[in-house]
Length: 160
Image 1 (tube, rainbow, N blue to C red):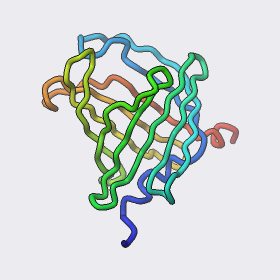
Image 2 (image 1 turned 90 degrees about the vertical axis):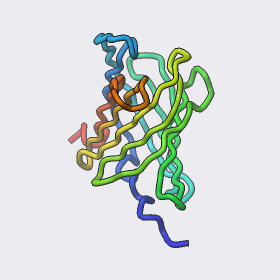
Image 3 (image 1 turned 30 degrees about the vertical axis):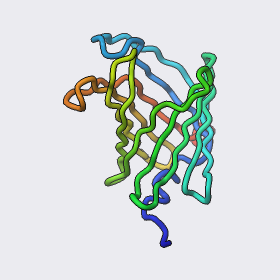
Image 4 (image 1 turned 120 degrees about the horizontal axis):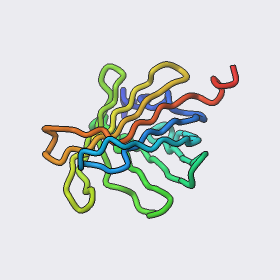
C-alpha cells in the first residue's frame, strides 16, 4: 500500500504546547458568556504516523482529557475522538480532512440530549502556533455556534 497523502496532516501538532482556551459557558441558548483557562498539551504520533494522541492537563483549573486521531488510509480521512478525564468515555467521533492547510471535521452527537452536528476546524498558523475551534449546529449544519476556541503556542517558542 502506498503512503497516504494525508499521513502528515497532523505532524505540525507533535510536541509540547501551552494552550489558551475560550469556552462558551452555555451552549445553544444564545449565551455570550465565556470562560477562559490554560492547558498544557503534549502530542505524540502513534502507529507509524497513522495516528496521534494529545494529552491535556489544566494549568489553572482541574482538567484532564485526550484527543485521539486515526487516519483511514482508504479514504484519506481522519477520525478524531475526544475524552475528558471525568467520563472516561470517547465522545462520538468527527471525521474529515485537510484542504489548503485547513482541516474540517464533522460528526453527529448530542448536547443536553438534543442531536447536534459537530464541526472541528484545525489550522496550523506557523511552526509555533495552531488554532482549533469547535462549533455545534442544532439544525443539521444550516447555522453554527462556535463554542470553544483553543490557541496553541509551542512551549519551546515561549522561551525564545
